[in-house]
View (cartoon, rainbow, N blue to C red):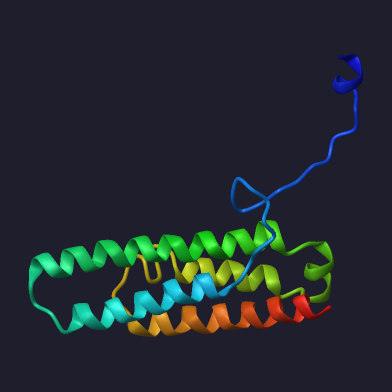
Length: 133
């Protein structure tokens, strides 16, 4: 019994309850593409019920973008990645802000959605470079 209490432990972290090791910035990109499409649909529709539903969904998708980026930032990227790509912290910060209240979550601005997609693409480029290593 005491042997189990004092046995060495292995620390693990994951984006889900089972450390699967599956990460991909495509999840964030798909949500961001959905945001951009919703912004276009809202612009073309005057129905207040539709617009309310669409805006709610757009806000939920923006939260999902932030979630997927944070998972990459906190669970996938490690100190050697941040050393090799010092801009990575800034990219993730800027992308999550673009998905936040002053970005796609709080506005109906297609230009913000395009900026968000561009930041996700920059993060994805780094991600895939790290997968090659």
